[in-house]
Length: 575
Image 1 (cartoon, helix red, strand yellow):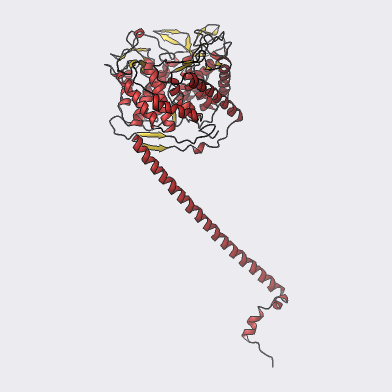
Image 2 (tube, rainbow, N blue to C red; image 1 turned 135 degrees about the horizontal axis):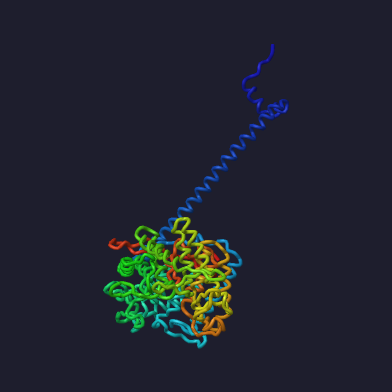
């Protein structure tokens, strides 16, 4: 009789290794099962561990954000207490590490070195004065002793990352800048240089001292608009508020001087919440729009009593230029909304008129903008009118495809002419104006050069808008000509004659405010003072684009505070 096995002994046999050694298939099956279970357990443990790590990281991130939020709330409270404004923080960190061409970087540093040379010379020999006379090494007060070069240079210093120089200038503004002067100041020059320079420094740094000073000087200028028509007088005494026009205009106001305060005063209303500045300057455009001609071209003299224009020269050069520039730029400043559409409409009308002034030379077909007196065209173009290529390029995107292409091509043709204003002289620096004669292309009229920026300004805009590096090359050639002919031991000077190279004794404040700034930006990444976020006044002071104040609506003031990192070589773009 066979012996039967107990159930217990049967179960234990599966734990005996000999059982599996005699049965290889079952051994293999057991091995596969063991490996599968091991992988499953290991994977679950890994997932749990990774999940725990992620939770830990998220907790740390939440704690960091809570700390930053608390800091921001504290900063906002402090800012509101100091300036009675709400702070908009613009993060410039995203610009760090941008790729940059080594040649552009090298050229940008050369321009920065030029700014340092100009600024150090001013600081040494003319500190607090309006302008430096480099040859005689002394300062002069061309604008009543308002520190014009210092204020004009604030934003250039800031953009280039020259922090120590900026801080010293800031201290002078805070401690020594005094507008209570018995001086008859130009409303136009004081607005574009001083009000514009202070507002730009405020927009870049967020330091309220600049806004307070801008408001002070603007309040002293405001009585100039108290005329029967609202067209301002162009001269005002800063201490007493007595306003008048220059005797040589026959009592008339100058077009550019009366129509080039809109950007600055609108910006001041936005930042202070006080609409009186905006109302004064926008009323000027309302008055001029009532009798705006079909071709959009206004003579350079306007009667401040009647608000009508007189029979005088029509030009995109001296005394006319920046009126047309501001029609476009106020539209940009106003976010291109319906509220500012009339500015764009007026500008487009003026561009139709500009086309009627465009002519070409023989034999080289240089395109230029002539001037007009009555029905007669004058074959003359100021270097000042070389701002027009940049303006036209900037405004071309607001047209439909066909007109946009047409105007951009015109801008490029005009820029080529302006570049040749420089290339056609022995010094490679442009004269003040040019005349055009059949068969002779162009000849220099007034032959001095005072370090003007207009051509470089247009090259900057065309490079930004087209990406064509040719404009960088042209700008570099112009910079080298300044270095060769205008750099002296104690700054930079103009030339009395671009044909002989004889030097003058003045470093114009706009050389630091405009010429060197546009050259620096010409070799900087496009995100540095982006044209989508900033608009330049006619003195090259960038103003932040913010929502407009609608007259009659109560609006909180805006504080445009760009807390850019202090960098050794530059605040913007990580270079």
